[in-house]
Image 1 (cartoon, rainbow, N blue to C red):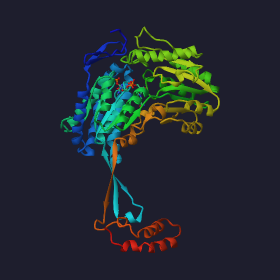
Image 2 (image 1 turned 45 degrees about the vertical axis):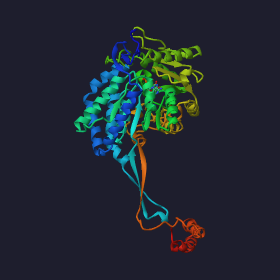
Image 3 (image 1 turned 135 degrees about the vertical axis):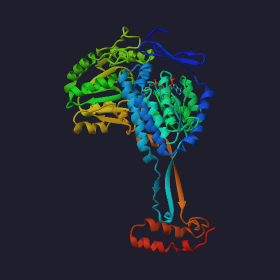
Image 4 (image 1 turned 120 degrees about the horizontal axis):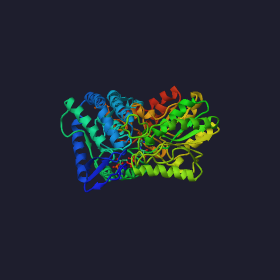
Length: 530
Ligand code: NDP
């Protein structure tokens, strides 16, 4: 295997993972075929029967244990995550381990209020002798298909939400990061053992393999799918799900805009732009993919960003001095390179970077800042997913809003400047999350809903809205007068006029008119019902 390439190959029924920083082989795994995927779903279905009977208070206790175990294993987990994904250890620690532990605690504390049944008041007088309630029940088996870029925090947050609401899970991680998913499974199983919940089968089943293994999960007898990944795979998955009316939540790609107003704190905004575009080598669904800067501060903004990019240390994620690691694969590197090269050919100016760093390894690309870009370039329209910050100036606030909204995507956006100006602008941006004077962190707020508009996806994960997507309402209605037949049952003969009076009694304006109408309803009460 050539060094530096994060190669995946199918050798018979197995696939191999490698370290994206140096091309070293990590491990190989058996590919789950259709029979094994269906067997995992069947085990999850069986597990859901006992798991859903575990009281919510114990399911919450389990997730508290999970949070503790995640903390206890943070070093080991960060090492596995960095080995598979290439990201700096600090990012693995914060954006995967900490975000996952926060998600577990959030689910443990907030699920009770989401699962609590609700009274449904009856407004119509004829229905007052009934008591209605909405109860929430788990959906059953949740399929989770996860990407490689946040290989712990994305599947973990979805898995915890599914578990606390009484569902079981079949998780298909990316073929690039299976070890992280197995580590998550191990933490959950350990917590189950500690909690004395040792019944088999386990409520979380992990299936490993390539794309077709995920495709098999979509075809399987699951009750809901949470898919996180690219728009193109998401569309394929949604079409397959539509065939069988399988509900899906889609967390897809982004082309997030950052708008910097001329009253922003320049030092803060430039640090944010650099971090927001280079974090995880730009391979973050909510990373800064386009930056619009007000003309008055534009040239200073560029020079400060270039200085800060120059200071970044690029290297293997396992080196604790590293700021920016490698790209995940050669394929990803080609996409980044192509977009930058195309922009350059169309007149864009690469202020810094814009090339590979072969001396570090085959997957390294220099942190890059590009100016003189416009929306004819794929760099400004398609997801780049690399360490590239394209910046362009704007004059009026309306221009920035128009350019930011000129995108097929709508995951997150940020606006920088005085809150007086920035907040109204943020509200006009077409995105699932808008941040003022911050970026990316919305994903880390366990209580905040995460999801996009337009091609960035359907539905929400995280927070109370994410929990709600994993339960279905059952309306339970109890009549308190079981010996009384209803006035609106058969026979209908001679009932129309008294019933019209009944409608008047409820809805005619004026008290007197309503009283008069009520007298005309008396025949209804005297009539015998079948
Ligand atoms: P992909 O769409 O390539 O893959 C996502 C998952 O789908 C992987 O587990 C993959 O398996 C699986 N898969 C591939 N083909 C199929 C198929 N036919 N049926 C079912 N599942 C399949 O995305 P990436 O893994 O490359 O992730 C990067 C993308 O994810 C970016 O576009 C990014 O923006 C997006 N993303 C969105 C987030 C959000 O919250 N909105 C968060 C993080 C990332 P395998 O890897 O084995 O091929």
